[in-house]
Image (cartoon, rainbow, N blue to C red; front, side):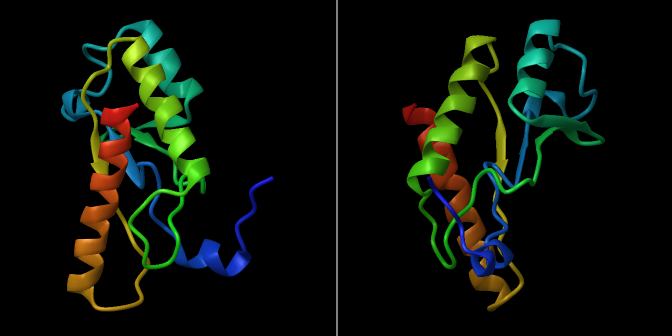
Length: 127
């Protein structure tokens, strides 16, 4: 079984996307254009409706190691599963926002956040 040390949980704040994974087509009016089946899949996969659209909860489901931009094996499987579920109901576009902890220089963390988001996007495209 996969376990993440407590210290790591404090330092890994980038989530699957997924820090924030929101549907780009739903930013203005989150529920317009989504079918009941799409909404059901979003909820089943752990998404929540926010003021900005549907977002993947920051529940520690997708984590990166400290100063690491690649998804670990368990997180890769989660991202692939979510991607397949979304595609299965016709959701083909998502926005992936990356996040880091507050340690280190802001410019470095911004670049790491971008690389992490791209890493998630690459897994989504390849899955």
